[in-house]
Image 1 (cartoon, helix red, strand yellow):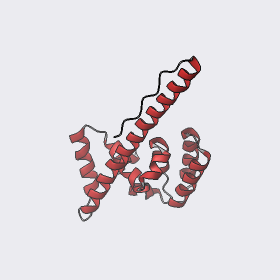
Image 2 (spheres, one colour):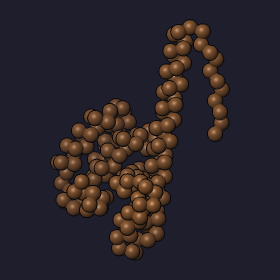
Image 3 (cartoon, rainbow, N blue to C red):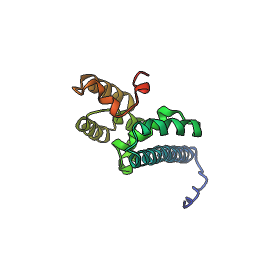
Length: 160
């Protein structure tokens, strides 16, 4: 990774404030993007591996459980990573959405409704709280059969 040039030491408080804000926000954005990239890649690895073993019934649940034990990672997080990747295989889009909004959007079962929400989120920079309310309302009103969520999450997580 190329190192950035250092910002000259500010001479006034106004310059200091501007420089500190820029450094903090840039650092936070870089850290957030790194998290999104790691969750996306984790989801890709799990999803593609499970596809290789698709002829083995219940392999996905078994391998995620084993991964959770062996990595010390919560199994719910591994399922979320996989679903995040399944809904958003293009990383450029997930980088724009971020982890929180991407995770909320990946819980929308209807692909067309999710696509509409993604457009709204990107166009209006919809905050996570407002998005959460829309996702809940949309999923509550969904005409999907009750077992549609089972395509995404195992039964143990559906009860959680």
